[in-house]
Image 1: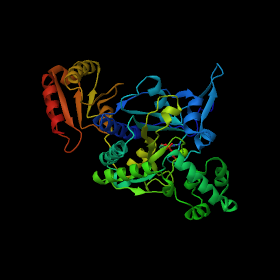
Image 2: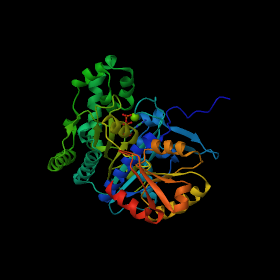
Image 3: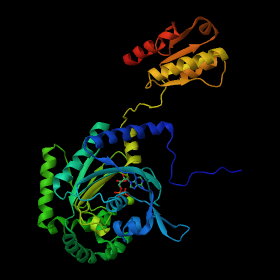
Length: 425
Ligand code: ATP
Ligand code: MG
């Protein structure tokens, strides 16, 4: 019978990779806690209307990337393609607005895209959202926090910050008209996607990778010239604060982001080490989204990191990550009496040293075959119980690296001995 395989674009994360995920998640968790951000855990499935109303009807996500289906009751549901919409829904529904809120979440997101390196159909984001503060010090805090994360992960030299302001919605409306007027004069030369977007979502044309379109855009009016005074002042203040924090940035006037809900600050952290899928973290301000989803007007800003891309980047950057499940001690026990003795001693040892990683051999086998396993486990030490050890109330401790020294010690000294070794290593 043919075996059933995972769905295209949805991957298993196996032990050799999961250690990178754990490393990343542990760093993120600690960093966010140290800045006062609290975790929320949100549903993977929401009403389709939530995403249509927030992300926008004429975005890539809503037009062609959502996993949408009817449940048994005929209700249209969607596997979340991103986290901000659900988070905003949750803060409104649970009455969390009013005071400022710093929140984060993580988990799988779903988009029907063409799978390739760094682009999957089930992928993972860690998202951060801050509600209730409209001033650019909030923007600076979020960006500085992300910069500190790259530092802690050892990735600081691999990413750069791209920054822009897309202004108020009125400013964007005025700019949109000027852009459309300009591009309309070059309609025939635009790529097909951009021609289509000219009607539906002209700002996204700025994102186009098509070289001819890029040439045409070089002569286009600039969004910066249309910014309202408040957006301009906030953006300037943000750059001052980033300068004060020593965070380098590149202003990218073409950066507009793909979702409708953004205003003012938008930013991306980009790497050159991953080919086309170079954005590892992206975000922006969304001051009207809460109101748009039925909450009382509350400003917000957030960003989302792509976990798969960050893991790829950690690997590409050669960052060494400890395998969290690696054995430090491998316990070898030959014969029934030895196995019983090992169980008794190891129970005491695990009670006393809960952080020590002990893998106990199971399934029997000869001394030779068990020692082979011990070597292959990557452990530093083998603890060996055989008939002699049981008869004498001792255990053999053998170093699996270096000279391979070994000695016997009374089982009553095992805890002290390993506590000492553990501290020394
Ligand atoms: P892209 O331009 O690469 O499609 P996006 O603008 O659609 O990205 P966002 O919606 O801003 O992406 O999501 C934030 C981050 O999540 C991205 O910067 C990226 O790191 C990650 N991401 C988005 N889509 C995927 C995907 N299909 N597979 C893996 N990671 C993704
Ligand atoms: Mg996308």
